[in-house]
Length: 332
Image: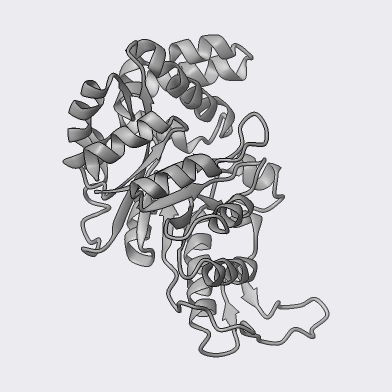
C-alpha cells in the first residue's frame, strides 16, 4: 500500500502546507493531494508545492469539472506536468448540484455523460494527434453557433506525457464503474474499508493496475471520543452543507451503508442552524469507521482493515508530523 498526503482545501483561512509536505516527501510518501470546493482552488497550491519538492507526485482530489472547460484543464495539466517533470495525477469529479449550479452557474444534469465526454476530450488533448474536433451532447469543439469562426486546434506544446493519469472522485456505484472504464484510479470519500463490498460489482472489471486511493483522517489522541470530534464536524458539514436537501450524494452513501436515519437527522439539524447538535448527532461508529484515531497501538490494529481492502493508496489527512511518521513506520 502506498501513502499519500491529503492537504485538501482551505477551511478557515489561507494556510501553507509546505512544511508538512516536505516531511511527507522525506518520509517516502508517494503523493500529495489538494482539493477545492468554493474557496481555494486545487491547482494553485499544487504548483506552489510542486516548485518546492522534487519527487512526490502531485494530485488533485478533486478538481471540479464544471469549474473549467476541458481545454483549460488540458492546458493546465500539460503545463504542471512539464514543470514538475511528470508528477501530476489529475483527480476530477462532478461535485453536486448546489455547487455546480449555485457557484459555477453550470447545469448539473447527466453528470456521468458529462464526465465521460470531459475525459475523452482530455485524452485527445494530451495525445495531440490532430486538431481537436468533438461533437458531444455537452461539449462541442469548435463551438456550434457563436461567431461561426472557430477552428479545430491542438496544443502548441507537446505534452511531456501523452497519458496523464486521471482519477475519478465518485460515491455512486455507476460512477465507480465509470471510473474503471475510463480512468486510471478511483478516489473514494467517506467509505470505510469494511464496507468496500458495496462496490464489488462496480470494481469487478477494473484492470490490475487500477488504483483505489482513499482519504483517511489520522488523529493521534489518547481520548478516542475527543479524536472523533473533527471527523464528526466534517461529516456534519458534508451531510448538511455540501448538497441540497433534495440531492446529497454523501447522504445517499450513508443510506447505502445503513446510516440513513442518522444522516437525515444530521442534515435536518445542520440546515436548521443547529450546527453543534448536528455534529453531536453523527454516530461515533460511523466516524470511527472512516478514520484512524486514537493511540498508536489502536491505529496500528485498525489499519489492518485498510490493508485487507481494495485500497492501494491511503491518503492520510493530517497536519500532525507525529501522525505522518507513525503511518510511515506502519506502512513504509
